[in-house]
Length: 325
Ligand code: SF4
Ligand SMILES: [Zn+2]
Ligand SMILES: [Zn+2]
Image (tube, rainbow, N blue to C red; front, side, top):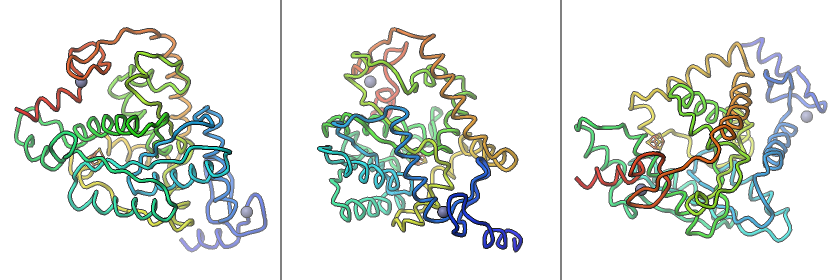
């Protein structure tokens, strides 16, 4: 540890003469506080431009949880929009799942942040839209044989409410705070479960399909080239007042996602570039699969009309029907 501290005290930034705050093992760069901060903001900007994420007149809805990632994203988009001539103001949107002792705290942070920067802020709750909080759903389903774990219910319902909420707010883009680590984890999960349709569907340069886009707003992920620990460092350097805890269900449920994340973290110790390899693998594979699977026919859900693969009902509607039983 003392060797490590001595290294940090002595090492100079790769771009100036200042002492460093981070050594990027995946690129060999050493960065001081100022250069690191500037570099993160440059990566966000370049990611948006490289993957053609935004058009000047887009109305951006930012999914805001009140954690470090979504606050760092909102701040960067706010700065970018302020520099863009005639841009439309951002709207931040939180989905309140109804997770006791967690979401109310993160909502407070989200609300305070928006107030400080004068950003319009909206909340949509599970309770108001589907009649139950996530806590109530878990309580109701926990002892049943078809219990699917909190995260499965939560992710499906939250995705739908975010999508519909963003559209109702007049959004043309939904910006999500997933960082590189989240992205690597999700990609590996999709590989493990052979979810090739989902990977194809996540291709960044999809042509607009009118049948699909009447239901789904375009999502963008401007933080996908930044590892989690760098968003953490950046948010602390910027002194963002974010909510630092994780959702309690993430720890409680025996979901494989947590094990996949632990595996990636272990791999990073000997192969620091592993998350970037996964991202590059995703970009290649999603492109290939998207073009290969091409113009697939989708069924429409018999309840809500949304595209739903080969079944009669979408997963969202299946869950809502289950909760009514
Ligand atoms: S960890 Fe699971 S239950 Fe908690 S917010 Fe995320 S998806 Fe929902
Ligand atoms: Zn520097
Ligand atoms: Zn449906």
